[in-house]
Length: 111
Image (cartoon, rainbow, N blue to C red; front, side, top):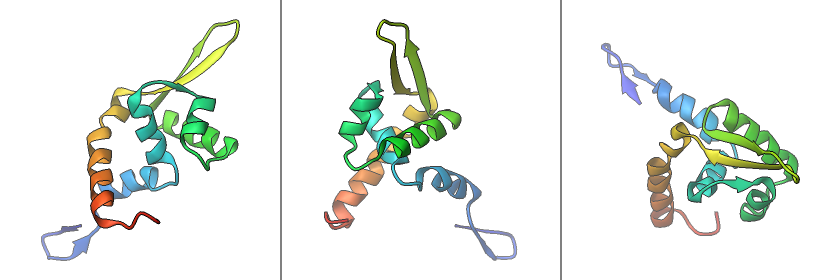
């Protein structure tokens, strides 16, 4: 939250942009899961229990379009696709660590 010269409150545009992306269900979780290194689609789906294939595909596409996740195709056989964080995506990890720490201290575990 910011104040202009007249003292009126206004929303921080950067927060609006970041939460438009990270506020979508699963996006932060996917980034956090990729923090340990590249993973294939099936590996991500298993690690993030509860996400459907179509939702995971949509979110990975969105995160790749935002430049946070890189999709890499390795020639086969068999053809293999993996996902990893870009430098921009990895730059989010300290903020996600802080959010996780805050959640551990301030949110009930049944959220």
